[in-house]
Amino acid sequence: MKKMRRNGHAEPARFALACAAFAWAAFMGTALCATIGLPALAAAAENHEVTVERNVAAKMRDGVTLRADVYRPKAEGKYPVLLVRTPYDRRNETSFGMKGAARGYVVIAQDVRGRFDSEGEWYTFKNESQDGYDTVEWAATLPYSNGKVGMFGGSYVGATQFLAALAKPPHLAGICPTVTASNYHDGWTYQGGAFEQWFNESWSTGLAENTMRRRLEKNADALGGTKVLPLISYPVLEPPSGDGIAPYFKDWLAHPNFDEYWKQWSIEDHYAQIEVPVLNIAAWYDIFLGGSLKNYVRLKTDGGTEAARKGQRLVVTVGGHAGQSSTGKVGGVEFGSKLPLDTDELTLRWYDWLLKGEVNGVEKEKPVKIFVMGKNEWREEDDWPLARAKNTKYYLHSAGAANGVAGTGTLSTTAPAEEKADQYVYDPSDAAPTIGGPLCCGALPTGIGPEDQRPAEARSDVLVFTTPAFAKDTEVTGPVSLELYVSSSAVDTDFTGMLVDVWPNGFAQNLTSGILRMRYRNSQEKPELANPGETYHITVDLWATSNVFLAGHKLRLEVSSSNFPRFDRNLNTGEEQARARRMMKATNVIYHDKAHPSALTVPLVP
Image (cartoon, rainbow, N blue to C red; front, side):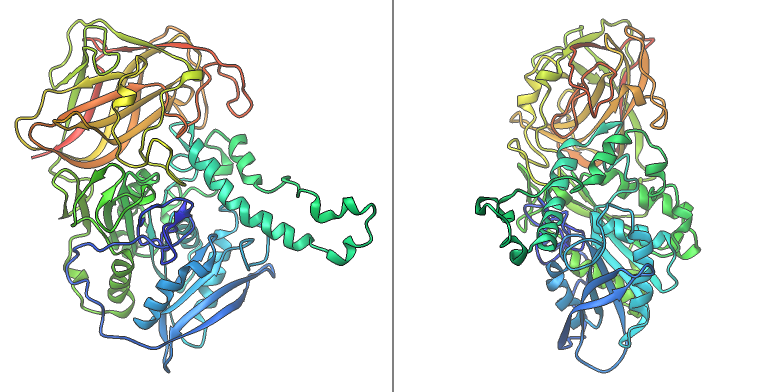
């Protein structure tokens, strides 16, 4: 991924939200970039000279020392602290550190346990609550701290915030997580029971680089090597072992169900432990969009204090891990000059209000701000989801031949009568490909974010259902879901859904998508294989979007059984996915008749 900084992604400035290539660095905690038209985003009057302390040690309760860089005003006094805890190299936080310190904050950028200059062993999520608590309390006692600590960052750097907040450190006053999840099983490592293969493998590869480097440095012994004979056996010529480089990856595969391994770190199962206000920054086309929206919605009711419940804010831009440019182009779509969002400034402005008590307009703004695609404009809202949105069902229709864009599939608000079902053969050895969409850490050759889906729609194993062209602009904003009545010749298979905006020139822009592995149709805790040929009623969560289908555009639904390599291929055998090699073809059927009214549900905004 790219470094997003504050969000854990995008470039050495910080993850302000996903600037440009959000690839490995993005997950690494750097900067997003851009500048949105949020009112009064002018810099505050403070403009301090800055002093920087490198490699500042903080000892955790178990004796492990973590290292940080501290940026602070070169002036007497005590200041609020903004803390970022990152696995992506704290040096990538320099840009925000300088900016925040000049603004009157002590900015502390710390390498988490087992990464870069911090001691200990690295393992995803495991130590972030305890170390986060200890670091917040350490930061609050520094001689130049006024005792108020806020956190910021995205992706995994958002996880370090939420996991720290669960521990309830007394001096934590707020967090600002960007493009991050609510559950590290569903919506991070898995989705709908399917393994997030491209993300999991590319992220682990990036993480392993530093772990391997640390191992090499620890074992380097040039003097001892001089005693080795024959000379050709000089140890430096031996490749290092890969054993134990990424133990978490094997553990992810060993725990495909939502079991205790995942529950211990699930944010959404412990919202009552979060007692501070949260500025949630999310993005359409982000790999963690579902969790980012859930964090906002659930904390409003389930947060542990009145301050937490009433202190929720939400900003949704476009891109996230899928990238964002200063020109407003994401993937294959140009969203215009209004899109770019300066997440650094957004974060500082919010903390100016929350930690410094500045009357800067934040207190007057509505709690939700979203970017509406199609119209390509920012809009403030009273809440999310929108109360005025009306959930509307678009039923699937066809003459039994919706295969591919040349087929007979249509969508309408009219419920079906008697209709012939659609079917296709899903072959794992020739899976329908990922084209764009929510990806991390890096783009596939077929792109990232919004891309033209017509190559996939030409396949016979992709069912395509389309409305007539809209006569007037039609807005869809909010959660999207797909109800299907299905059967399969296999004991296990996947069903995927994708919402698409079809332009008058034929460009098929993906908006949001989802997947369901049939063994998890009833529960992600207790998988159940299916009975071949039996009809099941399933729901595929397509997360959410905000898009105006302009007059002349069409709304389209794609249904298939793969989205590879974003998700691993279901081999259709019912065997353990992590170790299975045998593949079977599956004949999958979608029913859409009076007794089986398969439908896409979208929130239409008047």
